[in-house]
Image (cartoon, rainbow, N blue to C red; front, side):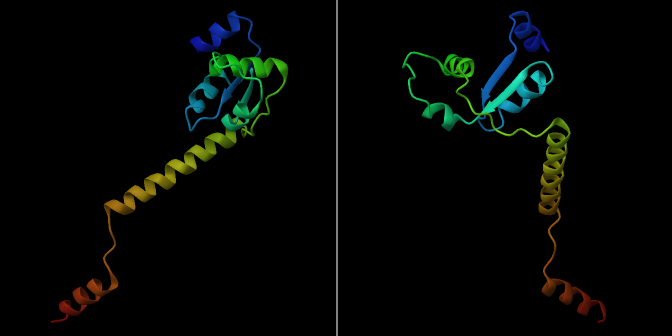
Length: 118
C-alpha cells in the first residue's frame, strides 16, 4: 500500500500502465480501488506519433494519458479476475498431477490381468 499512499500524496488521480506479460497484475491489485486505472497495449503506445527519443516510457505514457491519447484495454472486474486465476491454478495443478501419475497403456493392463489368472 506504500505505492498507493505515495501516489495519493502526490495528488495522482489516474494511472496508466503497459500490459507487458503478467508484470502489471500485482501493481493493478495494489492500486485497484484507489485510482482510475488504465491498462494499455504497448503496441498502441509505440504507434502514437511524436515521441521524443530521450523520453522514458513512463513519461511518454503519462503525457499520452494527460492528452487523452491512450485507449484502455478491457480488464475484467476483480471477482472475474480472481476466478480466472483460480481456474488457471487448478488446471495447472491438474496437469502437474497427471505428469506425476502416468496412466499405463491398455496393453500393459491387459498383460497384468491375463497374468493374474495363471
